[in-house]
Image 1 (cartoon, helix red, strand yellow):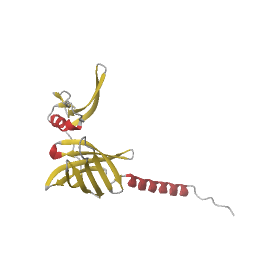
Image 2 (cartoon, rainbow, N blue to C red):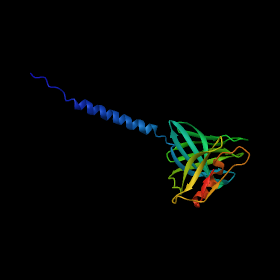
Image 3 (tube, rainbow, N blue to C red):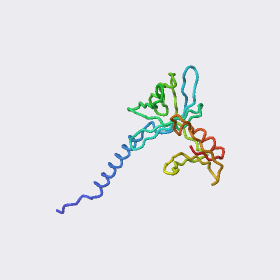
Image 4 (cartoon, one colour):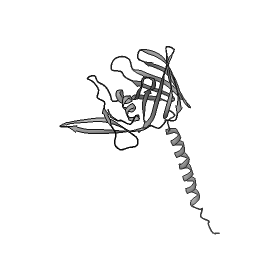
Length: 195
């Protein structure tokens, strides 16, 4: 009798299906449930502050920034640590205790305990869609003699020429984020702003 050869494509198809399913599973596991834009409130002493958090994963590391909307302070970087569903955002302060969001991510809610500015409270954020901005940002560098200077330039959308302002901090140690909310107001009003 003649020996029949098994078709080679069947094991190949099976192999590709298994690899595909494994890739999908790994992608789902690697997608961090905390990634996204979150909007909500901090509740302390019977009062609320509106806040928003933008959370991403870059090269396996959780990155976060927080907007304190009612204080008009935006894009404040927060070091983040996570363990399973637990996510902690903690920003050291030059003097005093850190600002902390210590909570749990469950589906579309990020809730937990909040500490900051000498107050304790709670926070509740919900996953949201980030609205588009009416400006764009560029990191810039330029020289003044032998000194290299750097800044963040916020430009209004649209035209190519704008009036402009430069925001410079005082003598105390400050970050650009301290003045970024002002720069955003200028840029959204058609005035370029360099921080």
